[in-house]
Every structure is written in C-alpha cells, then in structure tokens.
Image 1 (cartoon, helix red, strand yellow):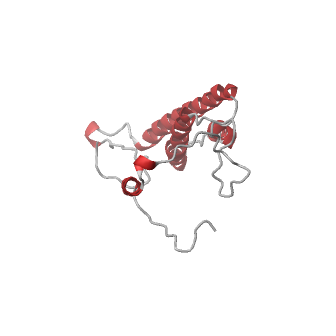
Image 2 (image 1 turned 60 degrees about the vertical axis):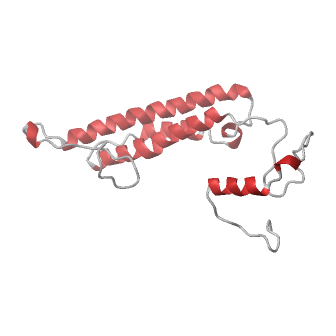
Image 3 (image 1 turned 120 degrees about the vertical axis):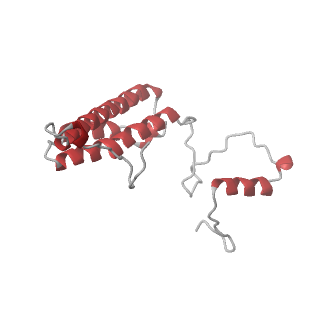
Length: 174
C-alpha cells in the first residue's frame, strides 16, 4: 500500500494544511535539485509527469468548466422543464453541444498534452457548445414563460417567474 505502519491521514482545510507545512519545513535548509526529476518508469503511484509536457493550458480548463456548467446546469434542466410543459425537447442541438464538449475530454486535449495546433480547434468546440447551450437555455426560458403567463390576466394578476438554476432551493431575491 501507500501508507507505512504508523502513518496517518488527517482531513484538514487548505489553510490548516499550509499552516502545518509552514511549521514542519526547515525553510533555511531545503535541498535544491537541479536536474530532470521525472521518472515515469519507476512511478507506481500514478504521479509521474510525462517527458516533453511542460504545460497545462489553463484556459482550456476554464473554457471547459464554463461550457460544461452551462450545458449541464442550465441548458439541460431548462429544456427539461419546458419539455414537461409540453414543448419540444431540442435533442439534436443538445446532442451537438455535448459532442463538441466531450470531443475535448480525451486526456491529451484537456490536460494540455497534445501539440499546440489542436488547441484553437478545441476552443472552437467549447465556443460552439457554449453558444448552443446559451441559445437553448434562452429558448426554453421563453417557452416556459409562454406556457405559464396568461395574456388575458390583468397586469396585477400576472405571475412573477424566477428561474433558479442551483441544485438547492432558494427563497431570497437578488
């Protein structure tokens, strides 16, 4: 296993972890290593760094988070709500959004481990997924409003509709 007898695992917050590291490390006597330190052939814990890959392309991870959150937390739930009210579910469009998003999920792409020429294409796929998700969310919101708002009501009798895209109930108004 990874633990030796007598080792213990402590669950802590990140600030608690940093405080423990600051206390435990002898900062004045740290050893400086100057050489290649990646040894994937001897790595048995899955923590190796692949030779030649010195990048993370953080902008890809941010674009992925934005596109995935919009599709998963906004477009899909809102389209499902509209469908429950009798509207057509935009399966074809959402499938295209998912395919564009998931095409970027192989580890060579999302980890930044591929050749630089593929990243503009990956960003384009994220943008396509994001645009489809945004448009399907807006369309579904309008469809829900159309199904729940009655034109023959007086203005004082109209419904006030609030969309909560969070996973928990909310009662406050911003």
